[in-house]
Image 1 (tube, each protein chain N blue to C red):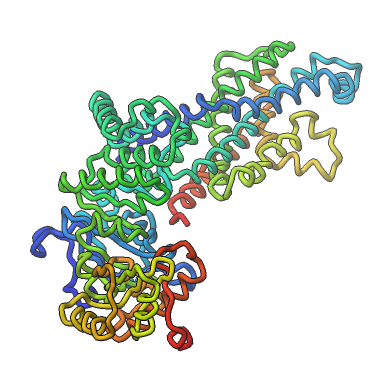
Image 2 (tube, rainbow over the protein chains, first blue to last red; image 1 turned 180 degrees about the vertical axis):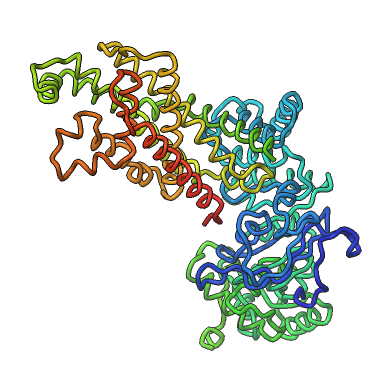
Length: 364
Length: 261
């Protein structure tokens, strides 16, 4: 886990791969509200790092500190971005990074093209080159038609694209994207993923925050789960999924009698009456599967369909951010299932996997 | 370093002028107040006022000459209210956060606002002055040097008020608050020697009118354009202007460099 990681160092050649971003014991409080409570980051150059967490976990604060927008608290360890010490030379850090914040950082009053040229001027590009770069990026982000219209008239997706296009004017090698797809429709969201993948293909380091698990899964090399200002877990998507036993076997029945029979016989499950399906917790191993099948055979129960589901990041997320930040042990499984049942039962009547449990489980 | 400051400030100035050109309604609205006051005081109150001031019969032309310098400085007070509003508006825009994360000169955002506002203020003074000339205002015996000094005075005074207004805009959470906070910029000229000489005011009020920046600036401008006695008002105006400009600059930059919420 990150707390036992070797001391971070941003200077090239200090580790095996040069680190684009490193931070140790990053802290930030507002009054007596602790937003970041000592987080460590080591992000190799050319990788995508996702900071995953619910609203209010401290994701934006982390981005704001790393992008020189606000200062970390005095008790924090050193922070290096692009090889520069944040505290010593923030201006050098600024020259190395590009930031697309959570709220669109475009000038609404002027046109998309004027926004781009403004960026070119602030990067001190010669006039001709500025025009070339601006035109190229407008084309790349499908904004040519809208280029002469004020940014205030843009749709959410267009504004995001303009936002990123502006970030790219200075050709930064490290890019911070704070919730780049929040509020976008699915099509714009996928377009944004495509853009991020292109950036990575160019060798850019991307620091991404998101509250969407599939987004982190889709894009990131490494994911850190931020909860209450601490990193609850860090690793690749697969590593994280292994931490939490969220896998299950799903049994579907055509015959309601068989469904009820199975529901009576199985000790631990969550079920859905309308679809006649049962979810039985399982790690997907051969041993557990065989034991389940043996049990069904012994009772003479015939399921019409059996599928094995490996845990997804949703499971990781709920396990790590659900109040208790400790990584739950294997034995927490039943409790967790019950917990999630209560949550879904109240709200999601239409949720096709809304879970129900046996009365004695609910009572515990 | 200086080259960077100049270059980035010029870029920010272009941005501000673009805003002003694209959305001129704010600037034009602020012009209405001084023009209306000018017409109101000259054509409705002019006879009474001039009779009261001069002690003789009503002389509207004389009152026009008296009131125009005050109206011109009042115009500056009005346009800087627009500065406070547009700075406050600008700070709520996400683009300011972007500027803060870029390797640009820190103060350039504010300098762009200040230079842009001073240019707008001078343009406004010219427009209001044109209305003054249209209704009969004439400078009596101003030499080219005095005209130049008058322009210098207007620029210096506008710069001072603009830096204060930028600070007011920075501490205001929204446009309404900025407009309220900048209210003294409109009220102070009403409480100065713009409309009536200080000597005609009640004794208890005279210090209020005397010890504030507008009165010496108005008296100085009067002296330059109409040849009246300037006396110590010239130095007082320079002192007020430099003092307010430095204060406003330090206040604004300290405020801007603070971590955003």
